[in-house]
Image (cartoon, rainbow, N blue to C red; front, side):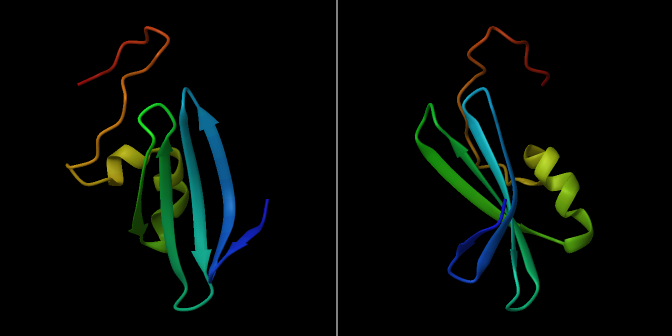
Length: 82
């Protein structure tokens, strides 16, 4: 999938349990960012990552997110590790 948004190109996206995670790259400055949308809370946040960590951040965005990020609890009764 390759969607152009301003100077950012979407490289990949995935959705699971109400969370939409997208990986973007910018040809201007060669930047990389991950965007996460919580469809249940109707919130969205994004953060820049180093290019060599891009794929890892895409698969594990909460390891790279700041402490102020809040998302809804899983809806399927899944256990959450703390």
